[in-house]
Image (cartoon, rainbow, N blue to C red; front, side, top):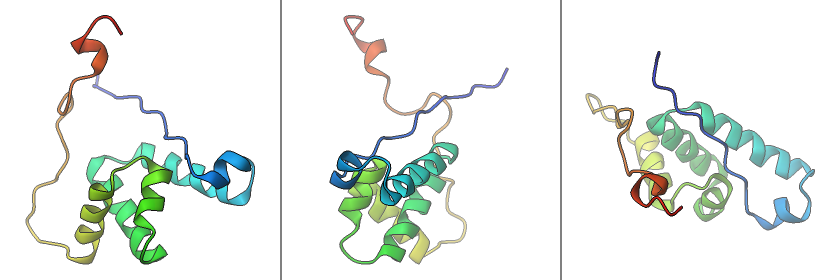
Length: 109
C-alpha cells in the first residue's frame, strides 16, 4: 500500500471571504486552494509564484492569506518561474520528511 497523505485545503482568511462566503471572489479562492491540495510541494510553490506574477506587485501578502503559504515560499516560487534553472533538484521532500506533527511530540494534545 502506498503512503498517501490526506490534506485538507486551507480556508481563506481574507475579509471578502469572511463577509461574503458565497461571493465570486470567495469561490475563486476556494478553487485555488482545491488545486493546491492536489499538487506536490514544488508545484504548489511554482503555481502560487505564477499567480503572484500574474496578479502583479503587492499581491504576495494577499496570496499568502488566501493559500496559507508563507511569503518567502511565494517569493521562491516566483523566482523559480521567472528564472528556471536546468538540472536542479526536485525540491520535494520524501514521504515522512519535514517537521513532525505536534501530536507526536507531546501526547497531551
